[in-house]
Amino acid sequence: MNQQLSFEHMKLEVKEQVGIITIDRADKRNSMDVDSWVELEKAIQDMNNNDDVRAIIITGAGDKSFAAGADIRWIRDRVPLDIYGSAVQDVLLAVYRSYKPVVAAVNGFALGGGCELMTACDIRIASEEAKVGQPEINLGILPAGGGTQQLTKLVGLAKAKELILTGKVITAQEALNIGLLNEVVPKEDVLEKAMETAVLLASKPPVAVKLAKIALNESATADLNSGMALEKALQAVLFGTKDKKEGVDAFLDKKTPNFVGE
Image (cartoon, rainbow, N blue to C red; front, side, top):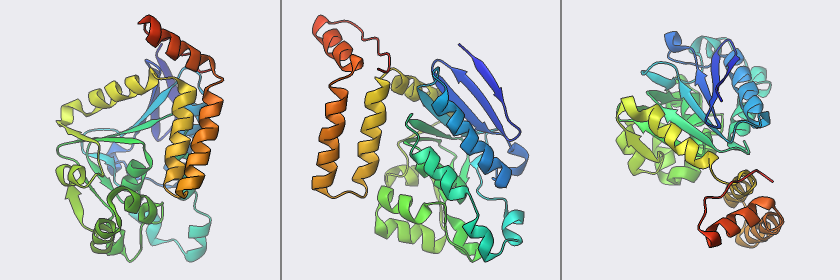
């Protein structure tokens, strides 16, 4: 089933149980203004509420940029109180906490807020030409969409300090080497590989995927005892699902399971 949904700054499509969100501001290198962030949050909500969607892809229009960060013209005129009213963190948390897995198809620059958006996704696949970084320091500001937190968890404090304090922009291969990306492919294969990964994720039992993601996200902040207690509680929930019975029966009977999300 293919389904087209309409936004001003985003293109949404659903196919093969995968919701594809394309940031559609190629003429501005897919930089994100306030309206774009609001639309992205709405798009994530729509995909999470759509029963035809089991996995999500976020990508950028064209082949030059995934998301080039915030619109600099917007930053120029902002004052301190504007930051407290900004919804950017809420949007990126919505991506991070999406109960359906999110794949970033990074088809070009992922800078500033674009890099933060990329790191909020569960799996990150980039083109060989992609470049990523948090260059906010060069504007006299810092990454405030979760960049100081997420980047540190993914690459470690030492490397995060190097990238954020210098504003260095690195290649896709460098990002892969430090664990910031999961895979690097030729630019013409980025969306295809992301789709292949998303379809695989969509084939898994939805409730188990959702709860496993919760446990994994909590592992970043929970102590070992608390994390294992949560793990046990979530496992108890899964042992009562139809999909657990389906998965076990299919394995024993050497059949392909049909997971229904219950």
